[in-house]
Amino acid sequence: MSKKLTAYIAPSILNANFDDLENEIKKVSGTADFLHLDIMDNNFVPNFTFDLDQAAHIMKISALKVDAHLMIAEPDYFAPRYAEKGAHSVTFHFEAAKDVPSLIANIRSNGAKVGLAIKPKTPFLDVADYLSDIDMLLIMTVEPGFGGQSFMEDQLEKVIQARSKINSLSLVDVLLQVDGGISENTIEMAAKAGANCFVAGSAVYRDANPANMVAKLRDLANAAFI
Ligand code: DX5
Ligand code: ZN
Image 1 (spheres, rainbow, N blue to C red):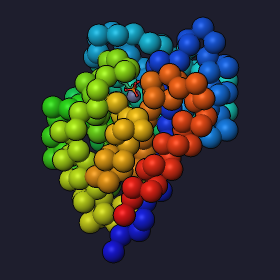
Image 2 (image 1 turned 120 degrees about the vertical axis):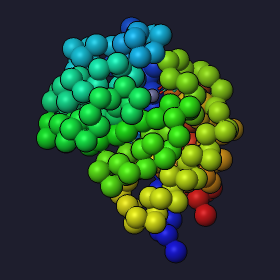
Image 3 (image 1 turned 90 degrees about the vertical axis):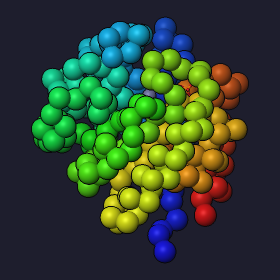
């Protein structure tokens, strides 16, 4: 039998007020596990958020560990720079990476944990062989680029496949993250499929009480684990 999972909640500030980030981050600092920082370059995805310097500033003002999600076209060069600037974990997209094993090693040697992300059209099998070399697998549950989109239920099959492989390899410390459309209505199905790290942007920041919402999401996920 595999060990019962523990849920980690990572609010995304993509839908927070960018003009008052310090205060927005403080709203969840007491309850969240990580701060999910979406980096978009207007190339890999049709949207721009923060560059490396802006991200470094956010890492400085955040009391939470920063989980940097790089939706950028050149992770081989840039991902290790985010590690160097102090990100707790740096997640790059499989679809954008030129040399996955070297990139994993470079992020790690610059002091961060390694996340590997796949878009909805990328099969789990494309990344299955990297599971023992990474700290987190991110299965996107929307097309990356924008917050506030609907959860893609058809991605849960990949979450089930990934959980089964993680368990069969006894990789108890590898996080299985889902990102996109996570809310009170969807988190339980993602948890039941085997995800244990949940990014939530609009569900948290559109709520009147973001801290309560983080706690509520965590409770729902923990109660859904079998
Ligand atoms: C989408 C981003 C997500 C997004 C989540 O490209 O990677 O982190 O901000 O936002 P919601 O929870 O609103 O889907
Ligand atoms: Zn993200």
